[in-house]
Length: 247
Image: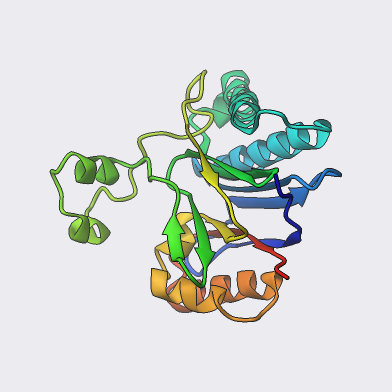
Protein backbone atom coordinates (compact mmCIF):
# COMPACT_ATOMS: atom_id res chain seq x y z
CA UNK A 1 0.00 0.00 0.00
CA UNK A 2 1.17 3.50 -0.81
CA UNK A 3 2.89 5.62 1.79
CA UNK A 4 2.21 9.31 1.37
CA UNK A 5 4.68 12.11 1.86
CA UNK A 6 3.50 15.56 2.79
CA UNK A 7 3.73 18.53 5.10
CA UNK A 8 1.92 19.33 8.32
CA UNK A 9 1.35 22.07 10.86
CA UNK A 10 -0.32 22.48 14.23
CA UNK A 11 -1.36 25.57 16.11
CA UNK A 12 -3.39 26.59 19.14
CA UNK A 13 -4.70 29.97 20.19
CA UNK A 14 -6.45 31.39 23.26
CA UNK A 15 -9.12 33.08 21.17
CA UNK A 16 -10.72 36.42 22.00
CA UNK A 17 -12.83 35.50 25.03
CA UNK A 18 -11.10 32.89 27.20
CA UNK A 19 -8.45 33.95 29.73
CA UNK A 20 -6.36 30.80 29.28
CA UNK A 21 -5.66 28.34 26.47
CA UNK A 22 -6.63 24.75 27.28
CA UNK A 23 -6.32 23.41 23.72
CA UNK A 24 -3.37 21.28 22.63
CA UNK A 25 -2.36 20.01 19.19
CA UNK A 26 0.38 17.81 17.78
CA UNK A 27 1.47 16.61 14.34
CA UNK A 28 4.39 14.25 13.76
CA UNK A 29 5.73 11.38 11.69
CA UNK A 30 7.99 8.47 12.58
CA UNK A 31 10.95 7.06 10.66
CA UNK A 32 8.65 4.80 8.61
CA UNK A 33 6.57 7.74 7.43
CA UNK A 34 3.49 7.02 9.56
CA UNK A 35 1.59 10.18 10.50
CA UNK A 36 -0.14 11.10 13.75
CA UNK A 37 -2.34 14.16 14.19
CA UNK A 38 -3.98 14.96 17.54
CA UNK A 39 -6.12 17.79 18.91
CA UNK A 40 -7.39 18.03 22.49
CA UNK A 41 -9.71 20.57 24.10
CA UNK A 42 -9.38 20.55 27.89
CA UNK A 43 -12.21 21.04 30.35
CA UNK A 44 -12.35 21.61 34.08
CA UNK A 45 -11.36 25.23 34.65
CA UNK A 46 -8.64 26.62 36.91
CA UNK A 47 -5.98 25.27 34.51
CA UNK A 48 -7.18 21.68 35.07
CA UNK A 49 -8.41 21.41 31.51
CA UNK A 50 -5.05 22.57 30.22
CA UNK A 51 -3.31 19.95 32.33
CA UNK A 52 -5.64 17.23 31.04
CA UNK A 53 -5.17 18.14 27.37
CA UNK A 54 -1.40 18.47 27.80
CA UNK A 55 -1.21 15.08 29.51
CA UNK A 56 -3.26 13.46 26.75
CA UNK A 57 -1.13 14.89 23.96
CA UNK A 58 2.13 14.00 25.65
CA UNK A 59 0.96 10.46 26.35
CA UNK A 60 -0.13 9.80 22.74
CA UNK A 61 3.03 11.33 21.30
CA UNK A 62 5.12 9.18 23.64
CA UNK A 63 3.23 6.00 22.65
CA UNK A 64 3.64 6.82 18.96
CA UNK A 65 7.32 7.68 19.27
CA UNK A 66 8.09 4.41 21.06
CA UNK A 67 6.63 2.26 18.28
CA UNK A 68 8.96 1.52 15.38
CA UNK A 69 6.15 -0.22 13.50
CA UNK A 70 2.35 -0.09 13.80
CA UNK A 71 0.70 -3.23 12.46
CA UNK A 72 -2.85 -2.57 13.68
CA UNK A 73 -3.62 1.19 13.77
CA UNK A 74 -7.06 0.88 15.41
CA UNK A 75 -5.66 -1.32 18.18
CA UNK A 76 -2.74 1.04 18.67
CA UNK A 77 -5.02 4.08 19.03
CA UNK A 78 -7.35 2.22 21.37
CA UNK A 79 -4.52 1.22 23.70
CA UNK A 80 -2.68 4.55 23.50
CA UNK A 81 -5.82 6.54 24.29
CA UNK A 82 -6.70 4.26 27.19
CA UNK A 83 -3.20 4.79 28.55
CA UNK A 84 -3.69 8.56 28.34
CA UNK A 85 -7.08 8.23 30.04
CA UNK A 86 -5.51 6.36 32.96
CA UNK A 87 -2.83 9.03 33.38
CA UNK A 88 -5.41 11.82 33.58
CA UNK A 89 -7.85 9.93 35.78
CA UNK A 90 -5.21 8.79 38.27
CA UNK A 91 -3.87 12.33 38.61
CA UNK A 92 -7.34 13.50 39.55
CA UNK A 93 -7.71 10.56 41.90
CA UNK A 94 -4.44 11.41 43.68
CA UNK A 95 -4.95 15.17 43.87
CA UNK A 96 -8.46 16.41 44.80
CA UNK A 97 -7.73 19.77 43.19
CA UNK A 98 -7.55 18.02 39.81
CA UNK A 99 -10.71 15.94 40.17
CA UNK A 100 -13.24 16.37 37.40
CA UNK A 101 -10.76 17.46 34.76
CA UNK A 102 -10.97 15.96 31.30
CA UNK A 103 -10.44 16.65 27.64
CA UNK A 104 -11.84 15.94 24.24
CA UNK A 105 -9.53 14.08 21.89
CA UNK A 106 -9.49 13.51 18.16
CA UNK A 107 -6.61 11.61 16.58
CA UNK A 108 -5.85 10.62 13.00
CA UNK A 109 -3.29 7.94 12.21
CA UNK A 110 -2.14 7.41 8.63
CA UNK A 111 -0.34 4.10 8.12
CA UNK A 112 0.36 2.54 4.72
CA UNK A 113 -2.33 4.52 2.99
CA UNK A 114 -5.03 3.69 5.53
CA UNK A 115 -6.56 6.41 7.67
CA UNK A 116 -7.74 5.53 11.18
CA UNK A 117 -9.58 8.16 13.23
CA UNK A 118 -10.39 8.05 16.96
CA UNK A 119 -12.73 10.50 18.66
CA UNK A 120 -13.86 11.35 22.20
CA UNK A 121 -16.01 14.43 22.71
CA UNK A 122 -16.67 17.13 20.11
CA UNK A 123 -13.34 17.91 18.50
CA UNK A 124 -13.49 16.96 14.82
CA UNK A 125 -11.60 15.40 11.92
CA UNK A 126 -12.28 16.52 8.35
CA UNK A 127 -10.77 15.41 5.07
CA UNK A 128 -10.62 17.73 2.11
CA UNK A 129 -9.94 17.56 -1.61
CA UNK A 130 -10.84 19.92 -4.41
CA UNK A 131 -12.84 17.17 -6.08
CA UNK A 132 -14.79 15.94 -3.05
CA UNK A 133 -14.90 19.10 -0.94
CA UNK A 134 -14.93 19.09 2.87
CA UNK A 135 -16.14 15.92 4.62
CA UNK A 136 -16.49 15.44 8.36
CA UNK A 137 -15.29 12.00 9.49
CA UNK A 138 -16.23 12.23 13.17
CA UNK A 139 -19.52 12.45 15.03
CA UNK A 140 -19.80 14.86 17.95
CA UNK A 141 -20.37 13.07 21.24
CA UNK A 142 -22.66 15.76 22.60
CA UNK A 143 -26.14 15.82 24.07
CA UNK A 144 -27.45 17.89 21.16
CA UNK A 145 -26.00 15.48 18.60
CA UNK A 146 -27.75 12.67 20.45
CA UNK A 147 -31.03 14.61 20.24
CA UNK A 148 -30.53 15.05 16.50
CA UNK A 149 -29.80 11.37 15.93
CA UNK A 150 -32.88 10.36 17.91
CA UNK A 151 -35.08 12.79 15.98
CA UNK A 152 -35.90 15.04 18.93
CA UNK A 153 -34.22 18.17 17.56
CA UNK A 154 -33.85 19.42 13.98
CA UNK A 155 -30.24 19.74 12.85
CA UNK A 156 -30.89 23.34 11.76
CA UNK A 157 -31.72 24.31 15.35
CA UNK A 158 -28.57 22.95 17.02
CA UNK A 159 -26.52 26.14 16.72
CA UNK A 160 -28.87 27.99 19.09
CA UNK A 161 -29.67 25.08 21.42
CA UNK A 162 -28.90 25.93 25.10
CA UNK A 163 -27.25 22.53 25.68
CA UNK A 164 -25.12 22.52 22.52
CA UNK A 165 -21.87 22.46 24.52
CA UNK A 166 -22.84 19.58 26.84
CA UNK A 167 -20.53 16.60 26.21
CA UNK A 168 -21.66 13.00 26.52
CA UNK A 169 -18.07 11.73 26.74
CA UNK A 170 -14.60 13.01 27.61
CA UNK A 171 -11.14 11.59 28.23
CA UNK A 172 -9.98 11.26 31.83
CA UNK A 173 -13.37 11.57 33.54
CA UNK A 174 -13.88 7.84 34.13
CA UNK A 175 -11.49 4.96 34.98
CA UNK A 176 -11.93 3.51 31.49
CA UNK A 177 -12.26 5.28 28.16
CA UNK A 178 -14.83 4.69 25.44
CA UNK A 179 -14.24 6.10 21.98
CA UNK A 180 -15.33 5.98 18.36
CA UNK A 181 -12.68 4.46 16.06
CA UNK A 182 -13.14 4.12 12.30
CA UNK A 183 -10.80 3.25 9.44
CA UNK A 184 -11.23 5.00 6.08
CA UNK A 185 -9.83 4.67 2.60
CA UNK A 186 -7.27 7.37 1.93
CA UNK A 187 -6.25 8.75 -1.44
CA UNK A 188 -4.10 11.75 -0.62
CA UNK A 189 -6.74 14.10 0.78
CA UNK A 190 -5.83 16.88 3.19
CA UNK A 191 -6.70 16.24 6.84
CA UNK A 192 -7.90 18.87 9.30
CA UNK A 193 -8.35 18.16 13.00
CA UNK A 194 -9.77 20.96 15.13
CA UNK A 195 -11.49 21.87 18.37
CA UNK A 196 -14.94 23.44 18.54
CA UNK A 197 -13.34 26.87 18.82
CA UNK A 198 -12.62 26.63 15.11
CA UNK A 199 -15.79 25.18 13.62
CA UNK A 200 -18.09 27.22 15.88
CA UNK A 201 -16.54 30.38 14.46
CA UNK A 202 -16.01 29.32 10.84
CA UNK A 203 -18.55 27.85 8.44
CA UNK A 204 -17.68 24.88 6.23
CA UNK A 205 -17.53 27.27 3.29
CA UNK A 206 -15.02 29.49 5.08
CA UNK A 207 -12.87 26.49 5.99
CA UNK A 208 -12.95 25.23 2.39
CA UNK A 209 -11.97 28.66 1.07
CA UNK A 210 -8.78 28.56 3.13
CA UNK A 211 -7.89 24.93 2.43
CA UNK A 212 -8.24 25.35 -1.33
CA UNK A 213 -5.62 28.11 -1.50
CA UNK A 214 -2.04 27.45 -2.59
CA UNK A 215 -0.66 28.56 0.78
CA UNK A 216 1.67 26.32 2.78
CA UNK A 217 0.08 24.14 5.50
CA UNK A 218 1.44 26.38 8.27
CA UNK A 219 -0.04 29.44 6.53
CA UNK A 220 -3.41 27.70 6.18
CA UNK A 221 -3.42 26.75 9.86
CA UNK A 222 -2.68 30.35 10.80
CA UNK A 223 -5.35 31.68 8.45
CA UNK A 224 -7.93 29.37 10.01
CA UNK A 225 -7.09 30.68 13.47
CA UNK A 226 -7.02 34.32 12.37
CA UNK A 227 -10.39 34.09 10.63
CA UNK A 228 -11.96 32.24 13.58
CA UNK A 229 -10.79 35.05 15.85
CA UNK A 230 -12.06 37.66 13.42
CA UNK A 231 -15.46 35.96 13.60
CA UNK A 232 -15.56 36.30 17.38
CA UNK A 233 -12.91 33.94 18.77
CA UNK A 234 -15.46 32.65 21.28
CA UNK A 235 -13.25 29.80 22.52
CA UNK A 236 -9.75 28.37 22.44
CA UNK A 237 -8.76 27.15 18.98
CA UNK A 238 -6.74 24.02 18.23
CA UNK A 239 -5.72 22.94 14.71
CA UNK A 240 -3.63 20.10 13.28
CA UNK A 241 -3.37 20.00 9.48
CA UNK A 242 -1.82 17.59 6.95
CA UNK A 243 -1.39 18.01 3.22
CA UNK A 244 0.01 15.23 1.04
CA UNK A 245 2.42 15.96 -1.78
CA UNK A 246 1.00 15.26 -5.25
CA UNK A 247 2.86 14.65 -8.50
